[in-house]
Length: 412
Image (cartoon, rainbow, N blue to C red; front, top):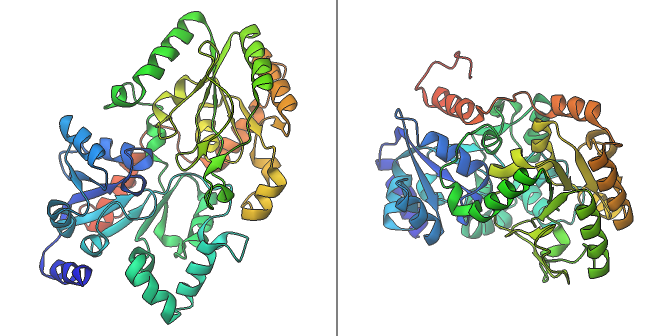
């Protein structure tokens, strides 16, 4: 009933086309595309961008640094959302009050180039997300009533959807049940961080890591970042990532890194905890907080190691080496499915075992493994822009949709 009352109130309150609500990571973190778009939009004097979050800490932190922020389900947060002309976010739209933001222009930036299938396109027909969305698409009354009470945002589709390349337009249109005309090629704001010379709030998040990177640079030490992706089976009762390396294997890795003057940072997905029976080795191996935003430091990473995470698509913009530690490729592919042929779009050595991972690291550091041509080719497939102006392009698209500029103006 409260949601209905807020929605009815929204019909009577005029929306300000120059007031934009920005959401980030389900309202839990200040990270990803929501963060970097907000930081750019906050500098634009022609609009007023306000971050909406469910996190008391995020809201307090931003306000302390002079940024406008509201908590989503407070009176202030709801009032702000009722007046906003645009709602810009990067995941499920739960970082603002749905009923208050319902009448605004919805802009979805998402949180990565999808290698694995998402939303309606997930291969497993029994996957909970697939079942829910297919029932809603079929307009089944029971499913729509359940969504109305528990996930009302699933009843509304995005007005604009942002991506990085023309090849992704049909992918996102299919996954989110949108006409292709709503999907716009803009680039991702989080990748703009690679071009920024200074980042607001950087010291709040990565000051310790920044010191490590500075020390590594001074010593001529090369930096490796290992970022394994989210896995569906880790959220069913036991959100744990167990596969890594044991203490004996870590000793081998430590020795290799010392011999080749390298250091490795390991960062898990924010939704996954790890129960590896290992410890930090201060000189060579460091486990980062799982909720850390690594985009401010990506430009200072020499080699990326991942499996199926979309971060490697972003890292291609730097045209640096990537190693793919895909020990569970068959299992992962069968549960989710891929949009693209894995071997064709992963320009780097594939390691299926820990021993192969060590070999790949050694070959890459010594320069005996070279995938530079494949990296350039794949980059051109998945990135139309490589300039650090993605936030500006998204803002231009929003302005055009809201009638603040002519839609014929070409975005930057």
